[in-house]
Length: 207
Image: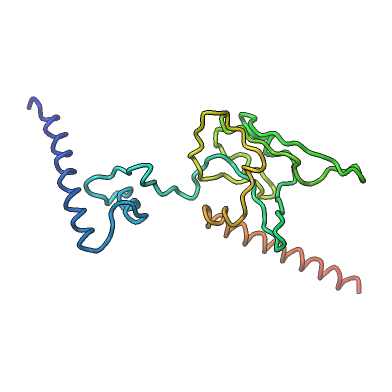
C-alpha cells in the first residue's frame, strides 16, 4: 500500500511520544527521578527503555564504560609527606609504540653519577593528533600511563599537555577503572609475595 512506510514510521514516533509520559508518571509514582540522575540515564541508555531516550547533554552525561579511552594521563602515588611518586621511569616505550608519534619525553642525567634519572624531566602529549588507541597504556611495563575518561578537552588553542596537566593520582585511576585497578593490584601483590618467598628461600639456603 502506498504510504505504508510513512505511516509505520509515524506510528513509532507516536508510540515513543506517549510512552515518554507513561514512563515519567511511573517513575514519579515510584519516587524516582528519570532525568538528571545516574539511574535515569542508565535506564534510558539500556534496551529496556521506553519513550524518550535522548540524553540532554551537558546537563546529563552518558555513563562511560570502564574501557572508554581518551587522552592518556600519567599515574603517581601519593606519599604520606605529600610528595608525588611518579611511576613513569622515562623508558620511552610509550613514545616508540605510539602510531601518530604524539608523545615525547625529556630525560636528564644525575650530575654526580652521570646516570639517567629514572623519572621524566618533562613529558608531553599532543592531544590534537592523539588517536586514543591505548597502545601507550598497553605496552607500559610499569602501569605508569593510563587512558583517561575526560573527553571534554576542546579549546581554541593547540592542546599539548605537559606533565603538570598529565599527572593524576592513583586514586583517580581507581575511581574511573575500579576493575582494572583491582586486577593490577592483585597481580602486583602476588609478584611481591613471590619475590619475598624467593628471597626468604635464598636466605635459608645460605644459612
